[in-house]
Amino acid sequence: MEAPRLFEEMKRRIIEIKHWNSTFGNGIFPKATNSVVGVLPVQNARTPLFKNHYIVFNNMMGRLGNHLFQFAALIGIANQHGYTPVLLRLSSLKSIFDIDVQTKVPTLTNQKSFSEKRAGIYDTRITNLTHSANWTLNGYFQSWKYFHASVNILRKQLKFKENILKQARNKLLPTKGKIRIGIHVRRGDMNSRYALKRGYNVADVGYLNRSMDYFRRKFGAVSFVMVSDDVKWCEANIKSKDLSIMGVSREVDLAILSLCDHNIVTTGSFGWWGAWLAGGEVVYFKNYPKNNTWLDKQYNKHDYYPSNWLGMT
Image 1 (tube, rainbow, N blue to C red):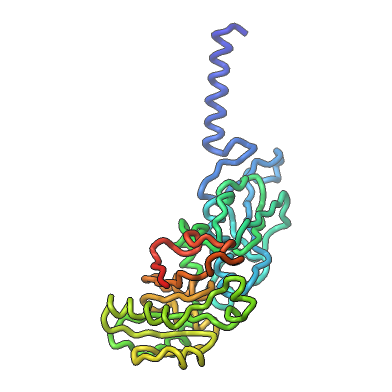
Image 2 (image 1 turned 60 degrees about the vertical axis):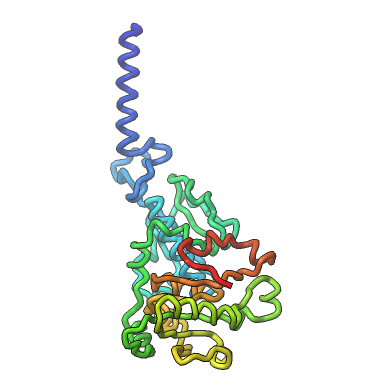
């Protein structure tokens, strides 16, 4: 072929390839979009041009707060990569929230697994998942950064079932126009000698009084509602006319926190999620995890606590 004709032919083919890539991806690594990602199959009349890709969480670890982080990461990562999120095992979350995600998928092929490096440190590798495989997530994924771009989607998924909201509302006393501040006090399992040595620091009375005073100074007359796994300790140590203390059940306690205008967080993921679900101003216990401990090495506080939350000691 003569040089001018060869040049024109090469130019035409390059234009065709660019058009194909802009429409379908390059055929090896499909184009990443906000829609469902597909792969180009072997040519077959019975095979659709695109196939759904899935991100799966099939073994949620820990308790309710842990499950919420794992579910939030699933939603955020799936949305980031244009995949379909799947909970293979019916999580306890579905008995508390009106969650609408798939629980069954066809037999998956070309599966890969992603395991986080640290429970409370955002793993930047998650942004580089290849789109030519189905993925299974393994870990705790305790960072707001996994789902910060999918907040609206996540809030729609995490709507409490009406019977739980009704119980929570019935427990709350009228505030008579006052700002309601939720407080979660986690002690229980975190107050053992073993847990404390590992860095599961519990908040002291001083922190609780200072954080409550912060909201009193800011809003004037307020109404505090405190939920805890150790109601007796709270009643013996935190006394105030503007405070009510209760402990109903994990789902009702979480709903109570979510109905507050603002929140005070002590330790653990349960209180974290009560504050996030409420969506107001948040004060958190700055000494959790305790510095220079095993648990502290598993966390980056900038990854764990949102930047607009206020840390206090």
